[in-house]
Length: 346
Image (tube, rainbow, N blue to C red):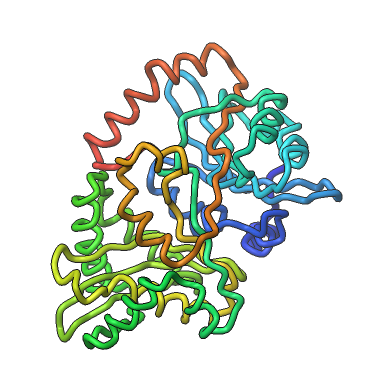
């Protein structure tokens, strides 16, 4: 791989969309530029391999005394282990790195895990909240799409409409951001997840919005805001990045209508698949007490297409520095990051 030139960076999202996996929002230029202010430096690398050209956003973090940690969020955008091997073949591309972390969206199969291990990669603690996601096929017409949902989900969508709930796309201005953040705070508190600062979410919501790729939706009953969702579209793929709802008025089922109206909007914009992001893996569901369990019940109403990926893997370039990072550096960095900025490491 080599650094992208100026012209390639200017059309970065087009290159990402041309990747074998069809592109990911976490490989978009907006995500790389957003991360500049949160401890990471973006590196835009491209492969000139004619068999499978791949454009990959790597985020780099300098670790004092150890060097650089490189991380490709939801990347590289490959569909097979042999494509990943070609992307990682040139170690010189990762200047100053002691570790390169990758998390391609390859199916979590024993064959793929064995293939990654054979490339010298080591399974690491997953960066993303979950290795699994649920994907809605937006290609059918609206009637067929609605019919594909579980009966209870269809009922809840119609119930919300009968109650008078309305859903509107709103800009990510000061009021819109504050409204959405308050909804997320309520949801995160219920789930027991740490919530990053308002400035974190505001920054990438506005960047994706400015790129014409992000949209915020809120559901209201009268003047009261009940639920919200932030969605991102890149080409014909879309993602449910963030959401939240109030702790009361569950009977009007506002979150269901938010998702339905977001899907209708995404279809009109050209999206043909809608990634609902994190759901528990089947192994996690079997325990019966996973933090994402309630969210899974909600998302499963929209689709049965659940995909589990291999998660995060490490390419170790310096064994001594890598061990120091894992044993001491990373735990310390996580604690300091949260204490100083109320932010997570990644």
